[in-house]
Amino acid sequence: MIKLDKLNQLSESHGELRPGHGMVSGVIALSLGILCLLGVIAFHFPEYLTTPELRKSYNVDIIRKVMLAALVLSGSLALFNIIRGRARWLSASAFVIVAITVLLGAHAVPVDPNFPDNTPYIGLDWFILDLLGSTLIFIFIEKLFALRKDQPVFRPEWQTDFHHFIVNHMVVGFVLLATNLLVHKLFGWAANDGIRGWVAGLNFWVALFLIVLVADLVQYWTHRAYHELPLLWRLHAVHHSVKSMDWLAGSRQHILELLITRTLVLAPIYVLGFSKQVIDAYIVIVGFQAVFNHANVSVRLGPLRYLIVTPNFHHWHHSQDDEAIDKNYAAHFAFLDYLFGTAVKADRTWPAQYGVVGDYVPNGFWKQLRFPFTWKG
Image 1 (cartoon, helix red, strand yellow):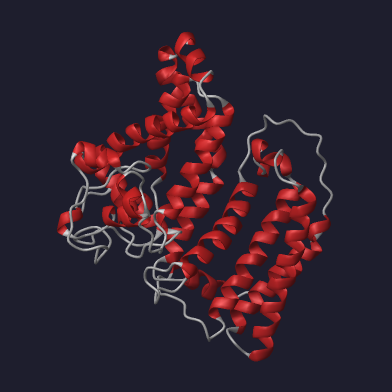
Image 2 (cartoon, helix red, strand yellow):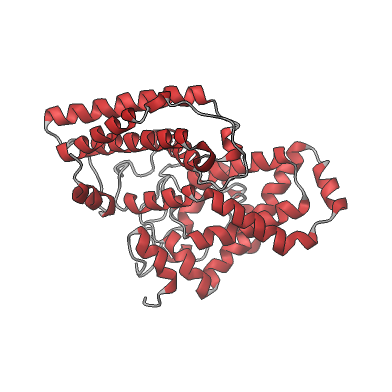
């Protein structure tokens, strides 16, 4: 039987989860069960719940096999915990969700591909695939190159960051629509066919370097404005309130900041007219680096750390240490901070403490969503 009160408490609490009591395996079973259930719902309503660009790229047969494996694993973990008497309320909830998923057709739901691409949608498939991919890749990397080896996967406040992850990924369709509309309305006048033609004709690697450089220059000054303008800082403080750095920490971002930053960064990319291949490669780079640089990994890259943003470089940006305040703004190229005089100068390799000085940003997704519009603290 699903214990809604306990599940709600689990989703809202901010304590870490340690292995040995059935909670970690129970959360894994529940998460896999929910993802499979969402996948089945997406199979039933693909025109409204899947991303048009993404559904043209992945193989549905492979997705079905992955879903079947996830269902078997989720059900097995849940059943094992129920038999062993470990966190039965949690595992029973997972088992019920697996059963509902099976009743709805599980991995065998037929999908009718004949529907228009221009229907309004929620990117449910993007959320599922990105969560699974990010979890498998980055938790593996964190365990292999851990900076703080005693930090658990389900560390304090993981629920808050997971809520941000869910919302910011589920509204991907809205974000893309809104940012594209804003870019065309605000910056369409600046597009020049001559410049766009020259950029489109550049060598792929030259164009890729240029798009990352241009985007990071905009990112640098936008990021700096978030720190130096009090009104914008209220938005950005939500991102800085995370106290434990890992792959999920970068997801803590206010939706308004997401819209503002993406609009400003996409503007020069649109105006300059980069090719689709270059933009796709840039999206892969920014997607990986945004997660990796928040990860709990001990990576510095030797002398290259003065050129490229690494986890070490960005961890300092999230530090409460005096020498790190309002420093290390770049997202891709560290040399921009050295060029503009905002690089951290410290006699230690890693910062001591993360978060906002004064710790005045509340915990919890909904509280953080409201925080920029309150004026206490």
